[in-house]
Length: 222
Image (cartoon, rainbow, N blue to C red; front, side, top):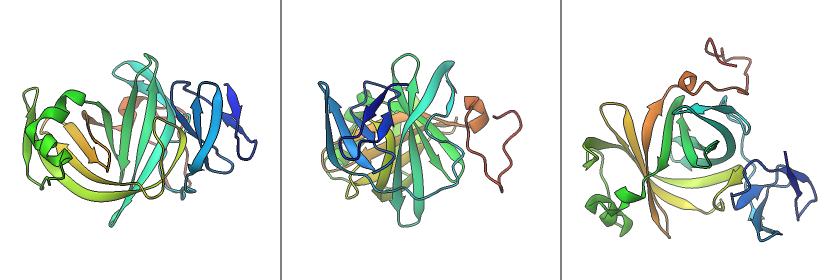
């Protein structure tokens, strides 16, 4: 695995996906911007607290018959808890996010075509989406089930964007009866829409999971 030297502390920082612009130094938490052969420390990422997720940087698996490796994580906090968003680098060169909250997982891909729907255009302009609001995409009807304000608690690994500690978002999760889902996020710069489905951990056929003394790994997982 290739490495770079952190411009702040000199520590060896492993690289799994060269196309991603940012990487967090695991030693000093410097946020390093990579570009045109230049490395710059552009801030600090918060030290992430220990959590009970079985997923770690380097966990591998498959999604839709495509192999992936987890290369980064962003952790978000809100008034009633926190959740993880794991960045999956797929073997076909694409990336997806694996949202994780209280043992529930959402596999999501960018859905730029959905941003132009009236409900999301209004949201992007500062409007609100309330629980129970509905939207139809590609013949599927989604219902807004979770609406909250969240703050970035930090990041690790390789990421496509910076993760400053003062970054706040409005987040809305939509559900569909067949197991499909949407995640809509708005910050001060832009609004993004992510589409996918709920998945079981076993469905991803993961390897390299973290083990816990008080957690029994499901049968068949490594």
